[in-house]
Amino acid sequence: MKISKIASVFLIMGVASFAAQADQGSGKITFWGSIIDAPCSIKNGHGDQRIELGQISNTLLDNGGVSTPRPFEIQLENCSFELDSNGNPLYNTVKVTFSGGHVPGDDSMLAITGQAAGAGVRIQDFAGQMVKMLKPTSGRGLGIGDNTLNFSAYLEKIASVTNVTPGGFEAVTNFTLAYE
Image (cartoon, one colour):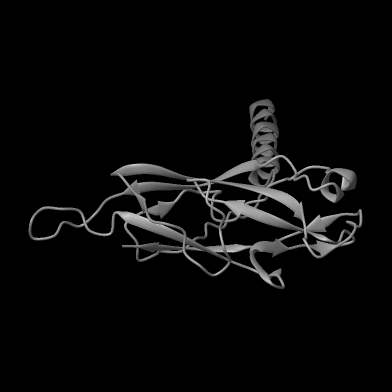
């Protein structure tokens, strides 16, 4: 009888212990992305980015200065290329086209929104050339494996504005890759 009570207590403790461990937290993980028709993948975290330009003096901009250029990059990974009949790689050059609202009359200056006004964002490509909205950059040759496309961005006063208005701002651009 004593053994059966002890066994019952262990059985109850075991069930209670199992019940307590059955759900000690749960969650959901969603994996998402897209499959693209391209010779390279865009590295995770480089499709959607936030680049901080900093807290920029309106006096600097009003006196014809520009903010410090902030580098950003688009990283490509796992690049592999088809070969033509002579064994030369196909589609191993990429051009990048940026789109977004530009300052009227200046397609190389991305418009800002927010409390600040009178300035815009300029983007330079890896060769130091000014990027124009909706115009592809010069082609960049790619190698097999991983590649990095370097850019920089800075804030500048709009030429037709007398004074820059201080405040928070944001400028958004999308990019599209085209392989040749």
